[in-house]
Image (cartoon, rainbow, N blue to C red; front, side, top):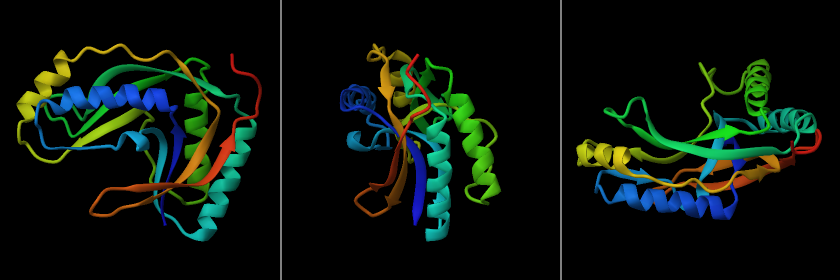
Length: 190
């Protein structure tokens, strides 16, 4: 099964991000937009995992969640990977007001390496993917729109836990199903 580890976003935050997607879509660039209901912050993409790995990853997430207080995130600026001029992934940055996200991401990365699960990543960059550029059609318009769009991020919000998500790809888009939702229980939000 194809899986990833995510922080789910509240509905009002997803709606605010959907508004940004609409403004960027005015560029008429060839972008595959993430469905608003599926917007999330990916902690780690795992790729194909076995049932045994799913159980091991769930145990790892339980252990990490038990030592992590609920996170408080705020969205920041718009950006793109690898660079704005060669945009392939459009995103909104995120910051953790509780300062736990870097530790959580690092411990998750180390734990998954010990399970031989997921590819090793260079550096974790907290972001919500808005869309993926599919071709160069109207890319210049998109880059201009990305530079000109101003938005006011929603207020900071609590993230009460971490989710192991199953992803099924189809011609109509991805379908996400939670495999495990683990609440953070390591203390109070700061």
